[in-house]
Image 1 (cartoon, rainbow, N blue to C red):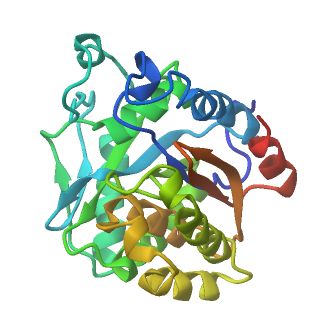
Image 2 (cartoon, rainbow, N blue to C red):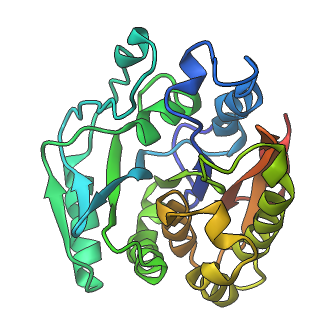
Length: 283
């Protein structure tokens, strides 16, 4: 892996699993439910052909009235999951923050007409530190988190991605962390076909031939087949909007696709080579 980026960092959208699922014995189904996704997350970084200087994560688990960005020099962790084994509340991820980068994110969003502020109290939630413990386990890359905005407007989140896209040229990995399907009450075999229909549409949208077509489809995602079944509330989908907005004219590529609990889940990358995308897709 390169020690410093020589080209723009990609933007990504990944599924982050269920709570601290990768760090415990899973008891809500087969014990190996999350094993394959865990393996993929543990290997995706070395396949991206680049090591970022900093990571900006948009998690499904933080919403604010205006876009907010963590600004601590050493961000704490927020164990925002419930009912899991005691040891999962002792997990650590001691990555540094990046206060100057956080301020730059606020400045870029504000310049684009999107209200934004620094956040000095809230810690990194599990949509950030759980996948990063697998992707970059050394915790040696500074991390900041960007919130979603109340209202959950897809166009606003695409615009937020567009506003911060230039950070990719400075070595910042922009990562949306959510899930391509998120309906806790509608999972399992009975919903496999519906989930697949939505996932197929989502792949067509994320990997559209032009950035304009991608933005149009994602903005109107509620027109997709099984849209509301797949996302009764869209907070787990909106991190994809930010990652896609940050892609510029780079074409999206699906880098992971697999059924988990008989529901198809996918991940996407923007701004990586076809060879890297193929490599990322390998188990």
